[in-house]
Amino acid sequence: MSDEKIISQAILSNGIKVIHRHRAGELSHLALMVNAGMRDEKEDENGLAHFIEHLVFKGTKRRKAYHILSCLENVGGELNAFTTKEETCIHASFLKEHISKAMDLFADVIFNSTFPENEMEKEKEVILDEINSYRDTPADEIFDEFENLIYRGHQLGRNILGTIDLVEKYTRNDIVKFRNQHYAPDRMVLACIGNISFADFLKLANKYFADYQGDALPFERVPFVANTPTARIEERKNHLTHVIMGGLAYKYTDERKLKLILLNNILGGPGMNTRLNLNIREKYGFAYTIESQYNAYSDTGNYTIYMGVDPHSQERSIELVYKELNKLMTQKLGTLQLSNAKKQLIGQVALSNESGMNDLLSMVRAGFFEEHIETLPETIAKLEKITSGDLLEIANDIYDKNKVNLLIFKGQDD
Figure (cartoon, rainbow, N blue to C red):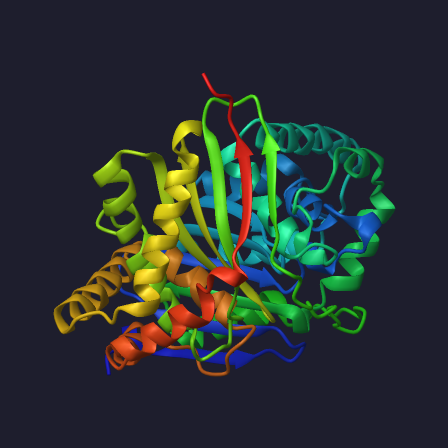
């Protein structure tokens, strides 16, 4: 097997998991993910995980904000971060000769951030603008509100950004307390894809990360208990009506996950030849945008079908979506249809991973869940074994009309 298909792993003395895949070329990618996100916040801490993601770049014991942002940018690299409901991640792309510089920077911002109060106040304004911006964009807001609908009463239903009232009141002590409670080394995965050997990467990981310790709270998450499916309609001043239909789906480690990924790709994935796009947008011209997604968390998951439609087309569009779901539940894919669907998904994954960063982010998240992380050839081999009967079974389990939740931001009729 080519060394570019081998994923190597190790655990540092302090508990940080290290993952590596060699890849020839001038570009390398590095990511450090912390198993702490919005879900780990108490109700009066909502938004803290995301706030910390912003603030780790604002100063450390060794670097001011300018030096952090310039460290990789000055040599042509890119530095960024994101927060999800279960993880916080910093990542970077850079020329291979700068791997040591990048790892030094990552360790510094994760373990040595000082959270200067003057920077906190400036960053609060940035986050408040972010909250208001998403409220001004119903096509984005409806996804958060839909998760609030299906996960109502649970941490997973909250917004990652927090609320304006909470963000405004947070102090440096709040930030430090949350960081100390959740940023322990044994809750971290450090991963690299690049033109460096695993031995050399491991040596650098030990040099920059192994000395850091942490005593976090016991890792506990409140399990989600399913709610009864429901529907909600909100009157909005938009011209377009925004609709999300969907429900609960499989958790990250469920063995049926890949089957649902394939089924979702057929229904409304990124291709223009999906069933939703061809039979609702192209055939009838109803939807400005129509797509479906599948999101997996550690103990649950969800699928969504989103469309932006003219208010007059809303009811007919929903009927047509149910019609497509019913087809997947009652009609097996033919041999050629199934073969083409598999080829399309394989091609999309390969193209998505070509830059390396998407591949890396999938790899680093898998580090929290799997002892053995699948390579692309291994995933393809599993994909090839999926049958049309498997997809029919998944469709009946997931797309049952009685399990569907519905959220509508209803636009104004002309």
